[in-house]
Structures are given as structure tokens and as C-alpha cells.
Amino acid sequence: MRMISDKAVFFIFLLERYAEIKKVSSKVVLELWQEKNIIEYINNMYEQYNAERIENAIEDIDKKLSK
Image (cartoon, rainbow, N blue to C red):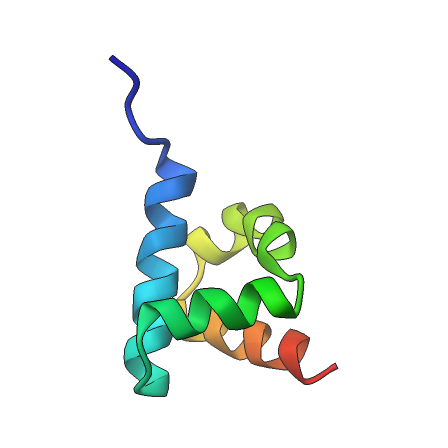
């Protein structure tokens, strides 16, 4: 039986939290992140995002999306 990784769990948490803060659905956020091609970037930032306040990750993602 394969378990979901900590990285995947955190990605889902971050996605849902971002959606909650932005007052949109998780589906809308995922589509935006896919459209802006930042999912790999977010996954690569796992260690940093997981060590900091979630608000820092949200701010960083917003900056990345605005570029």
C-alpha cells in the first residue's frame, strides 16, 4: 500500500488554504497555478514553505503569480 507523501499532503493543504484566503474554490486555484506554470516551483519550495508561516508562502505565491 502506497501512502501519500508529506510533500503532497502539504501541497493540498497549501492549495486549500490559498483558496480559502482568496475566497475561491480549490479547483480555481489549481487551474490558475497550472495556467501560470508554478506548481513545480511550489513543490520545489516545500522545505521553506513548510518551515515558515503559511502566510509567507501565500505572499510568495502571489508575487510569483504577478510576474
